[in-house]
Length: 85
Image 1 (cartoon, rainbow, N blue to C red):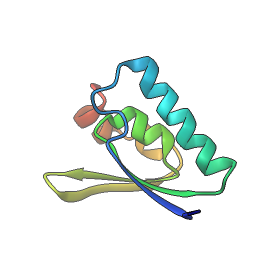
Image 2: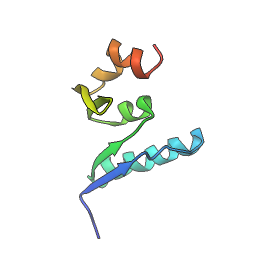
Image 3: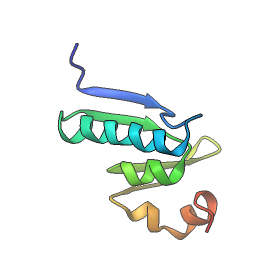
Image 4: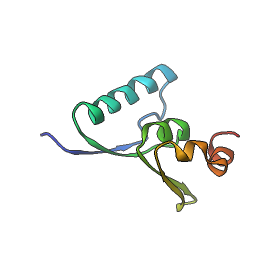
């Protein structure tokens, strides 16, 4: 099987930091080298926002923010709610 779309749910959950980085490197390779589209749910907001091209932030199950590029990493509301500042 050669899927074009991968749905990834919480790839960092329960992993120590060095393994989290490894998982995201593999996902990055699948995306950039193999051309896979990746739909990800990730509670590690910083890692998830750094990885994604298009980002959606949910608060209590409702869409709170959406954006492209690194816009949401620099958004004050997102920073205050999820990134500790």
